[in-house]
Image 1: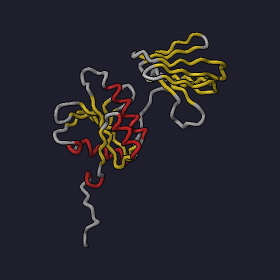
Image 2: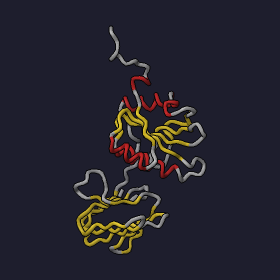
Image 3: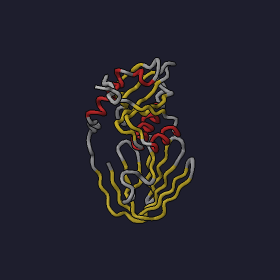
Image 4: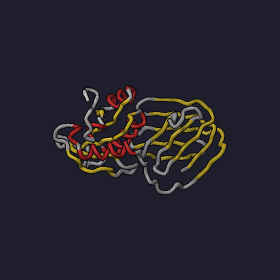
Length: 219
């Protein structure tokens, strides 16, 4: 992990163009090759970034990050404020809360919840950026990556999008479709998912556990 505090400007050239004027920013260069540009007022979300596989070329005060598609992130450094390099070691992975982990387990057992003819390939399917919750086959034999959440929010859609970008580079399983499954899915997350061709499925946790609703019982 490399952290660089610098006064810089950033230009992105690719499917569209974007410009960040000169200001103090944090440049984050990770071991997976990704480069992201952060400000002090956007929480975890970067102002701009380049996902792997990409390459960083440092030519004096001009850094150019380019991917296989020819998109470029050009960072021009006016002043270097501070820099830190540190090896974080192996990532043990996200430990989910009990409900979320149980949802994943139940959905793996009841994969036909996603549709007729669905079958499980593997839980926690490994990738270079972390395990996909479920990898399944649909009724037509197509590959589907499933991200399971208790509460479906924007970051979950972004996470699944990154998995899909990576999985679709594997000719042995591509093309891979995505399903975002959760007990509750926020409207913004559903809109983003559908815009990216990801299907949303709302899970009934109690029904999957075999617990009948009691709101209409007389006793």
